[in-house]
Each structure stands twice: as C-alpha cells, then as structure tokens.
Length: 233
Image 1 (cartoon, rainbow, N blue to C red):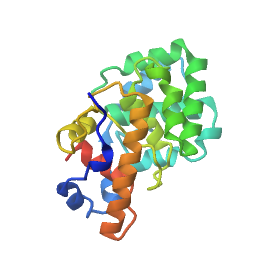
Image 2 (cartoon, rainbow, N blue to C red):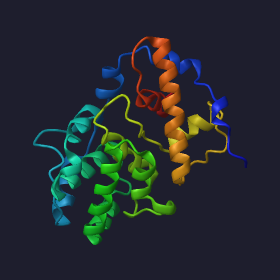
Image 3 (cartoon, one colour):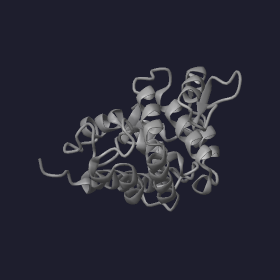
C-alpha cells in the first residue's frame, strides 16, 4: 500500500469540540488507577532499583505526576531513570499488567544496556528529536528492551517532555492508530510495530493539527491534546 499523503488529512470536527476543554483538565488531570503494591513487590523481587512506584496509600497516577518526574531526568541516576520507567509503565498498564512482569524481567536480564538505551532515548526526547529518541529504543524496528514496544516506548518519550505543549514526542498505540486509520483517513498506518519514519510522520501530523487548532481556539494547543482525543474519540 502506498503511504497516505498526510497533507490531505484533516482533524475531525468532534476533536475541535473536545479541545474546547481546558488543557489542565484533559491532560494534566488524566488519572489512572495503578497496581502500586504489585509493582513495588515485583521490582524488589527482581533486585532492581527505582521502587517504590508510589508511596503508602497512593493508588493512582496522573499525567501531571509523570510530568513532574521528568524534571532533570536526563542527568539522573540509574535509580531515577528506572523509577521513571516503572511509573510510566504503571500508568500505561493501569490494572491490566499483561506483560509487565516480562518487562521487569527483561530489564533485570540486561540492566546495563536497558538503562543506557533509556538514557539515550530520554536525552534525545528532551532535545525534542523524535527520530533519535524513538530509534534509541527501537533501532530498525527491534525492541532494545524486550516487551517494550511502540506503545510504551512512546509513552516514555512523551512524558520526558515534562508536559510542555510544544513537545513533539507523543504517544502512539493501537487505539490511537485505529482512530487515525478509521476516522482520519491514514489508511496505510497499520496497527502496530511502526518504524521510526512512521513515528516521525505521526509526530509531525499532530504538530500541524495542533498549530491549526491553536489558531482556531485562540490558545496554545499541544499535540498531546489531540492524541488524547485520538485515543478516546
């Protein structure tokens, strides 16, 4: 299938309406219930640093919480990098925990290379380089950290931006992709395993839409506000 011409794609009217809500409500305040006790137990059992993912009695994380974690992260210790990883995974998985034990095991089995790849990716994301950042975790379409595919890799790159509306790295998962294909017309996108070039095109598309919506609404719209709608239109 020939690549879809993204210049022709327009954001659906329903998304225009959703963007009338405040950024703080839709983005910073989006909160997910997490299995904190499970994460704390399994991280400790694997002998890995970075725990606990949350303090006593904390059973949820918001996007705003993870934005705060990103401050100074590129120069952080191994423990700080892994804590960021665990907390992003906990937020992304919620209570489902489908592959998370395998992800923890993959880091334990290749701790040094996993931390090095994570550091390279987050440094590139902080420099606002989606191509280098994505490639650091998925060179030539291969997961450096086993079971850490595009959906969770892009969450890490996104949260590394600390919530800045202009940060170019955004989350791409199967639900976002489904809306892009079925509602927005990106017929060539596919449903998973996206190569680096596709992720870069995706980020650029959402940046264009965010710029257009900023002019429409008279405020700065972040690419992540559009991603939020694509995930749950």
